[in-house]
Length: 239
Length: 262
Image (cartoon, rainbow over all chains, first blue to last red; front, top):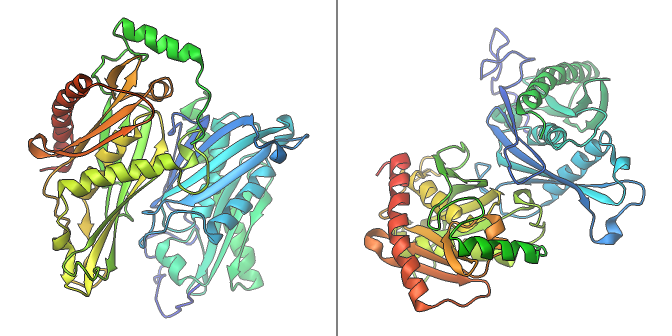
């Protein structure tokens, strides 16, 4: 959070630098079945974010010590390709990708019916090919679509959206510039059927009113994104 | 990569097909899978390409960094090529530090490009002894259905050919295209059912023996060779695939030129 309040990012008409209103999300496309060798997969572009998710399993969990007698283990990895950002990222795990993998796994484990597959493993591989801002939200949302594409039973799909604050105004779905100079960021994972939350992070500075606005923006945007996800799965068809 | 148990039945099936001069997916012995090449598709990379060969899908991305030239070569920049096959690409690829297989992949592709001299490292120097460009080529597999080598090599040269040196961002002049003076092309042959075939699929790789990778430059100059996996081949066999590689690399060069422009 830079907090460069002197850079004007919202014009007199309340429009943002890319012409969006405060509640608009960036353009989204979803395509399923993009990794032919996987059991389920999905490519999601969200603004200039480009994320590919592959799902493998349920399959044998090995080594045996990771097995659980009453449920499947969910093995989630979030990774950014070395060429996905302006400055190259050294390949390999770092603290940031570890944390995002963990919170994504926690969110997905809340909806996947893991009890149906004791002693097995489900692998979710999230690869960010091109990053703009909000990759963790795109990764989590795309992972839900890929799990659905793999035919893995879930109580709901997680839809993840972030809202933030720029020039002391709450806006939905920050882009790259807004994220660099933003004053707050509130990513959430929403279950569209019930409105419940399975993923929540926040950093920056929000007043109680601003926080409520950001929360509402996220929940409303999630409902819109959910429609695109359902449409993509219908078009992709079951395997 | 965890090597799965190869059922004897797959090997004998491949052997049986070979005796009838057939392949498991119906292709001819020297026939490649349908290949699609897309370039300039990743907005954060200075050069990029995506190659789809059947169900094998890979990306290549080019990034630039400023470096201090090595003291024994003050007039030269650097070229680095690394390949990553992350577990997204198939159920047998495992997480963790780069496996021997993916290191081999990166190094063989690197040699073909480096030794062809298509990137003039002297032209990457900005201030001798002080500042030079380092070109970093990252190869990234999304879906592995066999023959990652050729897919990586094709994506690599296509990504380099559309790479733009980001001089303005680093405040060292004006952006310009990276100079790529020639086009090395790799052709890989696998021994399947006791004879070599071009562009093996995953099943053929699993049920086959050794593989040979040939990188040819302009006028059929040889720039890199690699024999991988257990197996024995004769000089005659090598002559045969070398001849085939000359024809195939010509076709692939045409493909790259048609997409990237000469």
